[in-house]
Length: 168
Image (cartoon, rainbow, N blue to C red; front, side, top):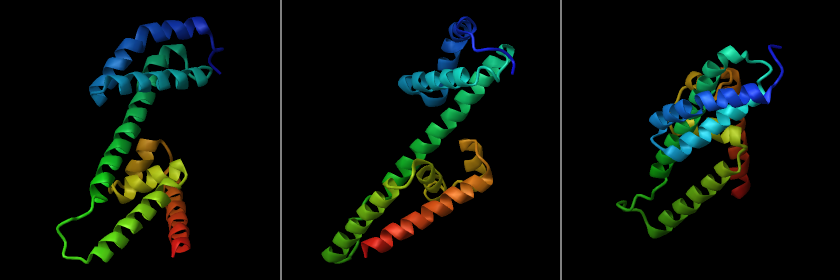
């Protein structure tokens, strides 16, 4: 334990680094609101772990936490965009209208099943299956072990299979 959580020290750290942290995140996101939100989350994380972080290392800790949070947000946005592109109906097919309706219904059921996954399963599943990110890279982005990524994706697959089998 390095120190007790002192509001005076924390306030000093906040006033000293908040603007530069937001600027750093704005550069990463290109979105002022997202930069502000992520900076706030980083400061909240610092406050929660303030007894474990020496005040001299607070800046490095803040920027590392913020960077990891930025990676998660960017990865999630990328997955959402790619997933949205993949579920758009292909209107140039020669399939029957019945097939197209069934296909659209199945896609909606699949989306509902994915939405029903636990958030940590859904995030890992979409990053791997839609964005084609390797387990190791997912583990780094989410700050978890590769085994945890494997378990999350495996559980997601089991839940999706159970949900889809239940629909038929």
